[in-house]
Image (cartoon, rainbow, N blue to C red; front, side):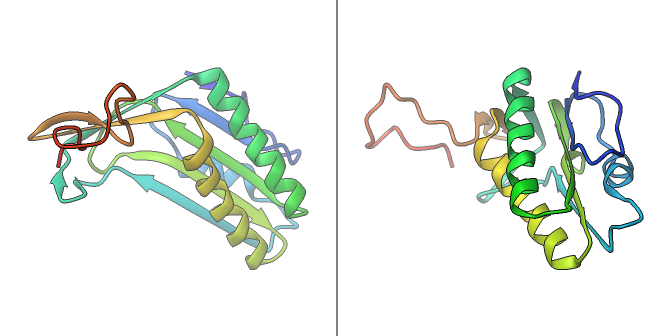
Length: 162
């Protein structure tokens, strides 16, 4: 388990990477406060299909210290862009079943527009930049999502399995 520590209500973001199940209540409790007129959340869950293929489970792997640092950097960026926002982000690692929560994002702000924008920016940047890798398992076997063998040139026989 890699965790930023005990949740604080001093405006610092909650940033967590762990193998234990995630809690929306933990994230929401961290960002809620008396001056927040809006609280938004995002739950990323394991679905039963992707790109037309059945999915029975996912595996997430992370470079924990790097993932936590990048998540903190993202939270600082958003806090600089959207004043008075409070943020929480937690990402799961390990084996997850269909329906399990893979990522939780929460944002609070004085008004809904800022809370929506902050929550959307948080999940979009986490997905784009944090070193966490996803492996899907289905009837055709397991494969890393977004991975392409750099040793191979594009062409017949080098496509992503469909």
